[in-house]
Length: 332
Image 1: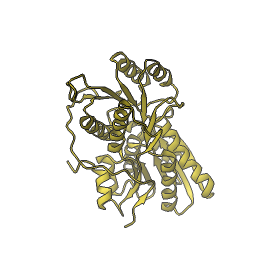
Image 2 (image 1 turned 60 degrees about the vertical axis):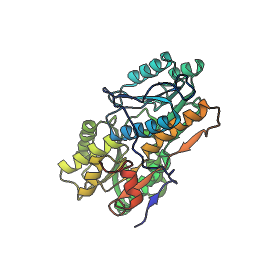
Image 3 (image 1 turned 135 degrees about the vertical axis):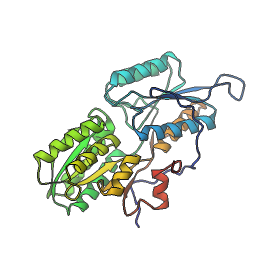
Image 4 (image 1 turned 45 degrees about the horizontal axis):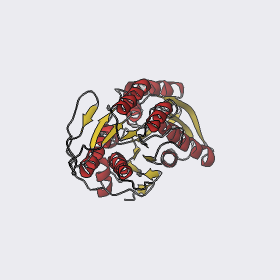
């Protein structure tokens, strides 16, 4: 079975991290004195949310890297991916608490810029992950190459529908770079190389299952000849797959998703989702905090770190390499 890789994956050992879980979308690593007897350096990790398994896996990687580097690491995110003001408040709080480094997955690539500039003015470097800012202010950006990932999703979708027919896109947050790049990568690939495929609708769900379900249902109703729907993150994919299943359209409409939660894997096994692009969220968290540690130790870090992505379907999902991506800490 052939493994379809977008980029080379950075290898990580499958080690269970020590994590002290908090509540309300927040957790904190062990605190105490550093090896030299002083206070530990503090890295504040602020994600887009805490409702998806993706972010929980990012957290595990971040906490493991913090443990190895003897850093105090906190991890938090808003309750959902529409709460831009709440995320700005979290960055403000990290500044007030004098974080040594802030690691941020911005919900909006423009709205978060002023508070990031404030952090930089206070001497707090910012590393972005998953999605980027509309700026070059960040010290490093650690993420999937989302445009390439969108392009691969388009190629796989085209194969599934015989290179012709109507397709739709259900993206997550219109203001975040991940949604924009995954949408544009897909759209540009279709428009450039598949003249007989028409994108009939592009909708946004804020990464919310219920919104994605509703949008998908409306798309299917308005486009009876629809052959496929591409969903750009975990929440969107689950909502789309649920809608396709409820409408009894699994044999008619192909679903190509993004990320790999337990629910998505179940939909793949059932044949509701045909395939999805899997990122490496553990690497994202681990390499982000490692980059923060390097910054704090005056080491040079890469401006752009690609954490890799892979297309998964029923043909390769049981391969050893794929199983490590689907279950980075082993099956629970």
